[in-house]
Amino acid sequence: MKNKRKERKVETEFLSSMVFLIFSLFTSFTVFLVYKPTRSFNVEVKETVAENKPVKTKSVQAIAEHAPEKPKVPEKNNAIPVQTASVARTNTSESNDLVKRAIELVNQSQVGEARQLLEKVLQENPDHEEALVQLGLIHLLDLKDEKVAQTYFEKILTINPDNKVALTELVDIYADRADGAGVKYLESLYEKNPNTSIAMGIGQVLIENNPVAAIPYLEKGGEPALNDLGEAYVMSGNHAKALETFQVQEEKARARLQNADGEGNEYAKDELVRIMLNKYHALNALGNKEAAQQQMNEIRGQIGSDADFLTNLAHPSAKHPKNPVFKE
Image 1 (tube, rainbow, N blue to C red):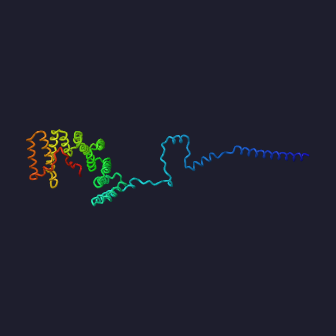
Image 2 (cartoon, rainbow, N blue to C red):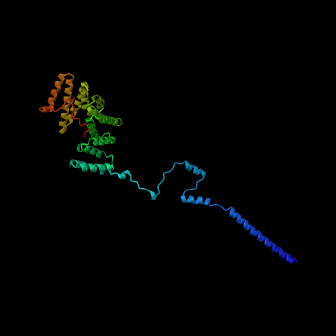
Image 3 (tube, one colour):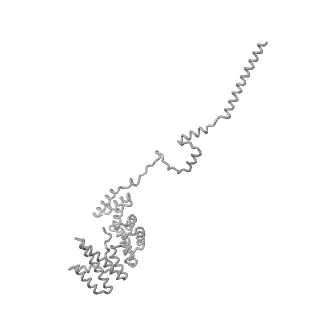
């Protein structure tokens, strides 16, 4: 009887143990299903690695947000090669060679071909100064298109206000039509770059129609403007100032004549005689007949037997050939 009870007890304990074990396993499995971990952290890490970005703490993130933004570097497969200006433009020596060739073509009366070459240079180098000069001269002298020539000369002066060829031609264009807008353009250049050549140019444009307004500019033109300045004084009726100007001019002309030789000597001699004749007219206008006669005797001593020379000289109150002060 005792043995049977022992067997039932062992059997009962075994069954109890099995039930407890099954219950424990069930409870553990239930807890696992309810409280299983999410993949949010793993996903964040995966995305971070995929974007090749470092994981930042809040303090590091705050510093990064206030730091200056770095320029974006395009990916290699999306990069578009950009041609730089230095590569895109014809180099200076090539441009200069084309300009020289264009000048040769003009001298051979092949103006159309020359124009094409010069326009090609400007396509590559829009500010090529000599190409602009030559195109301006082609339009002015060969194509007789003064308006287009004017645009070229004005552009040249915006690039280089000291370009004497462009300034000379532009002054002649403005002076021929008494262009008030042209005067304003030259005045704007003078404000930015107050040099004697621009001052003289303004005076030359003004002298025919407003000699009084021309005088202040011609006074700033230095020695090259003395001839026009004296004329402006004569035209405005101030013969005393005209005489003073011609005397200064005469002294400088005599000094040049002493140092000249060959063709330069002939030019210096003609220049001196013209100045002396201007001085003669100023003396007559002031009523100083004796001094005027003495001046004429000196003129005749200079010209010798070339009496026709006097008939070819204009009175200073008349329009005279402009002094070639800008010509190279």
